[in-house]
Image (cartoon, rainbow, N blue to C red; front, top):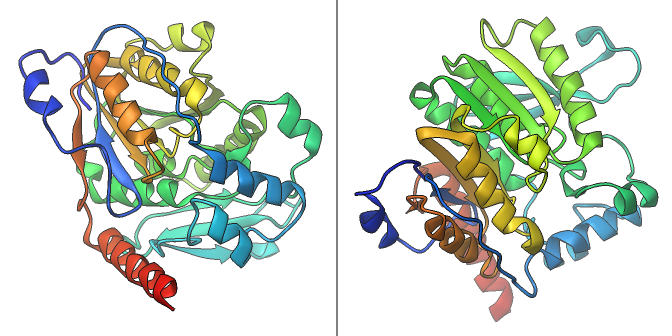
Length: 317
């Protein structure tokens, strides 16, 4: 998505419908206008089913959960996850630190806490969208991989919205790209508490160089949060943030307002009902130029094809 482009808007509106056959779709919007509301009856139901399973302390990788959730498989295997020993990290309060290292760009890795223990019912009922505290979702993994692949295209200030408990995509930009600053954000306070620890741990390890990396709670529907950052970023990115119907228009408006003129947004999302199509329609109505890409990465596409064949075979048996 691109902002502040008028002549190009007509061209990009006729681009591919925002749906990525890889199960992780990349979509780009950018520009100015009004906020539109829409409603999708069933979007996000599967993801909330997974959250309910976690609250009941069932295994997130059980066959039942995989069947009902959009997380059809746990990972695209784009990063290697290694649990750190006590000698390998300086935080003695727990043993939850792990290292994520890119399989295809092994010179880049980060220290994460990607398991914060069981969610509590009162946290779900009294806080904003806890799904980012469940796991590193496949869309986030794919976006992080894409950011490493395109690391030389980032510049200036970068913001990740809805990054959950790790903000892995924005973190990879902070580690690999020559940018001035990176803001890692989510609407959930517990997520950001963890992200703050992640940022500090990687800063101590010298991962960020001269890049200023910060984190904060940013809710797309909060005027105070958005107005404080308005017009500040060259790139805004998010992964799998389209499933909440009531916040989809708010996300479009937040992206539009946070971007500088001619800024770029990267939006990754799985093919979940009509959520991506509805989002792209809202983005176009808001004056953003929308381009959609499906086969944007050979490794991701290959995993998608294998998964599609497997599902077809299961249906026929």
